[in-house]
Length: 384
Ligand SMILES: *Cc1c(COP(=O)(O)O)cnc(C)c1O
Image 1: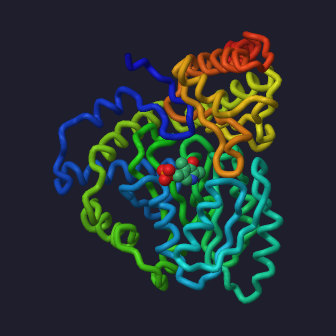
Image 2: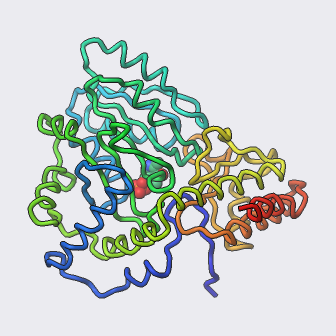
């Protein structure tokens, strides 16, 4: 029997039935007025979530496609760029930039703490001849459960001419972000996180300052050419190549759901999930990797109890309780497990996850008082 699963990973996230119904609609012609109207509608709604009046373009690719677009459309071979690296995904910025021949200065920080605005300010201040073309940061580091202080990092760059690029793939929608007010030049996000869709779509906003840099850019791009995407959108509310049309229709439905709930309420709901999961974990005597002050509302990384194996925790949760959580990534894969709590997550998902985690840990030999984590969640739920 294919048992019902609860997906508690930081993407792909669960898909609401309403969205599934739309995803299952018959194929549509993607060069029709009808479909152009859908593209226009989702683009306008995404701009509201991005809090921007900049151009916003849809790419049919997973989030990394937009990350690549954010490099190859702006960074030329030999350009100097700065990457704030505090986790697996922020490291991807460095890797993509190297592929395109950039000279990458990585400001490395520990995994599990926020990127240091002072370190960035020092590098920017030292760049007297303004060689740095772009600064790359991450809103929500999914591998560690840390939300970085984007306004502070942006302020560290002051009026330096470098563009400021943000990976908001797992944060957009659930973590507050102000593209225009914070002067963020390029912001990328993806469909399978807070947008409650399958993977395969990503979104990228581009400021006028970034377009100016794009004009001089010497790196090659074709599928990910943002000027090609902009031209088709501006002229015809369309895309240069066949878009993932069913996903875009599904996006229209999921954006409607977010609009109905209200962005403020969506974010408040995620804050309460964060409180619940963290309270539960602490009640069980475990330690979240990130401190309360900068803990993500999308995902919580938990330090593995001494003597247990991450793989066993993850497998027991899935095999016995049909709850999917995940281990760490890269160098922290064996040290932490991660519980995603973003997107289409309900209170009962949180309760089931915590209850199953208690049983899992107990079975694996970690002495944890059954019900203690659940009680911590219930107390918060009753208050809310
Ligand atoms: C999921 C994620 C990505 C990668 O996106 P893909 O859709 O897997 O390409 C990049 N950055 C962050 C912060 C993410 O959470």
